[in-house]
Image 1 (cartoon, rainbow, N blue to C red):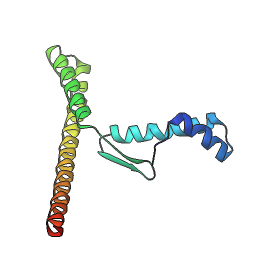
Image 2 (spheres, helix red, strand yellow):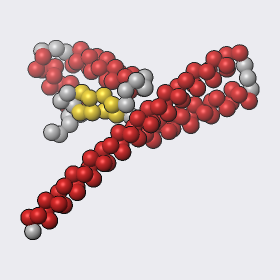
Image 3 (cartoon, rainbow, N blue to C red):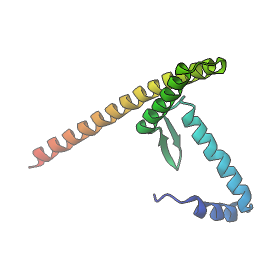
Length: 131
């Protein structure tokens, strides 16, 4: 299945559903913002959209966000303010969620690798028996 670009999708859907392109664009904007918000909420590491695929957090983005939060925490720690304490607290909680999400991503990655290796070994064993 070849994915479609939004620019292709909007006119096709508008014609098919007999709606204006602006209406379709608005619906898609709300839809994609919900997907982004779900991933950025850190509740889920993956979002599966039937017919579109699975969207997931990228481990390097999680690392980047943790580093950014740490820099901000350091800045407020060096120059404490009343509002800074609240910011430090929020970012610390965010980092905890990010680290938990990263661990989950690593577990899933390890599990995928194990499954892939197991399949590869089964294929190799099957080829040896055929020979």
